[in-house]
Amino acid sequence: MFGLDSVRNVIFRAGRCLGSVVGRRLKSTCKESKKEEIAKYIKCRRDARLSICLVEDGTVHPCCDPPRVIIIGAGMAGLSAANRLLQCGIDNFVILEATDRPGGRIHSVYLGNVVAELGSVNIYGGSIKNSVYALASRENLISKHAYDYPMGRGICMTSKGVVVPKLVDATAPISMAMIHQQALDIYGKDTGDVGSLWDFFVTRIHQECSLYPERLKKYAARYMLAITNDIRYRMGSDLSNISASQFGSYVPCPGTDIRIPTGMVGTLAPLLRTMPTCDHILYCKVVNKIIWTEKLSDKSDRVQVVCTDGKVFHGDYVILTMSLGVLKEKLGMIVPPLPSVKTDAIKKMGFANINNIFLEYSNPFWLWKSGTLRVGWSLKELNTRKTCPDWTKAVGTVDEASGSQQALFMGVSDQEADIVEKLSDVKIAEDATRLLRTFTGDATIPYPDNILKSAWKSSPYFRGGRPFIPTGATVVDQCALAAPVPDSKQFIPALLFAGDATALGMTGTMHGARASGVREADRILELTRMASGRPKPSMLGEMGWNKKSENQKMAANN
Image (cartoon, rainbow, N blue to C red; front, side, top):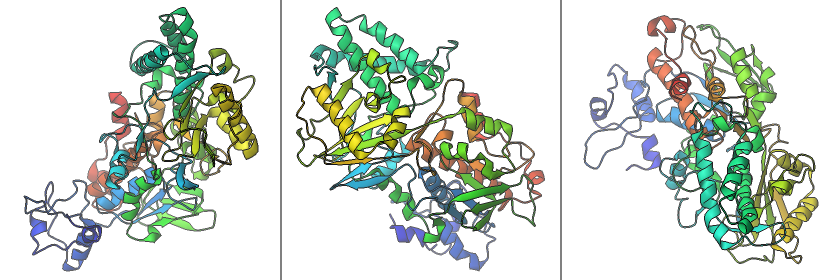
């Protein structure tokens, strides 16, 4: 196996690679001067048993004139798109990132001597099926030091400081896992309007609790409602806003949820290392306007991206990976306006707020790996959230921060996440301590020495934390959101849309964002191979462009 530099600078020996390509043969019409480009574009490995060179199936011909690609956003979707283009022979791209760092909503920072996640906390589904899990494995981030977080973890206590009985502790997680699966199974069935996800959960929890002895019913209800708060945090929105009939469009990856104590930002390393030069990612580049045309011309640019600093970038394709929150707020920056089917989809899809809170203690009041508390609110207490806002009522679990013996973690969503962004650190410390004292029954629990919190909605570059399918919307709207523009038989796409909001079956996940970036890169690669280079006026007639978009196919399958 060659090292990284060897892969980038591979040299073909005696032309043997050109004659024995696996999957597809490159034409031998390139001039001698193109050999360096061939070596640059094609990833060649020598198998231990085969004396042949392996080439990515999607690799474009190294002699073609590559299209100019502009990628907006250096998050997981944008970096994955760039990595895929490089992998298949296109390096004529630039990534425009509004902030001063890569990662988007992957944001790892130091809290004392440990890493805290202000953004994505979990790899949802720790298995080879998850592409981000694979990235983490490539960096040796998945080991005995990575922590899994099953649904039934921690000690559940009530707001009166009472520990939930052992029988409930053993059975309630199983019951809630069954209810959760039943909610997923609604999708695709002709059940009519089943209302919101919250209505479904409350009804099923009430039914399950009726099976418990009378003295245990209230404890079982509190335990299962605590898990609904965890689901609420994962979804980003109040469950009353989420469509129960569309909840099952999300396809979970096998495996438990994984947290990486060394930082989720490490998953970006394999993608960043592939960048040929630093100039391929430009930071602090805030996009002000995107000008596009559906017509192909040899004399004018299909797309122009204008930044707030006056810099203008010209290209053949633009991949938009900004958050759905920014897309909702900045629809006017796209000129001419997007088609109505696209704008309607953007407006109908939901984008909620999620924030993470870390409490650091110089003298922790728990032993390491024993600090997880499940917060067992009653239904009556939770129903007061609308009338008497209290951010602590969005907390389902208080966890130890990954890898830390001195910090606790709480996650909140929706309006409670909005409230947290406006509160001072002192007020958050007071409220969090009140929560801990109430549920443990220990009035002596100290105040934290330090508070760290995220503020995603306040940021003009994110405007929230997680997309979701709300009541009134369906997967069809998500397909429309993910479709390129123009998306027809008469025109070649100019604007391509990626990001976790466009990932069917993987909404709001890192692996969904990665898959969407690869999807749009593959779309460009296919167009480039069919046109033998950049899009041109004769392209439609030559190719007979009549393919359905990938998302239309996926919608049909769903």
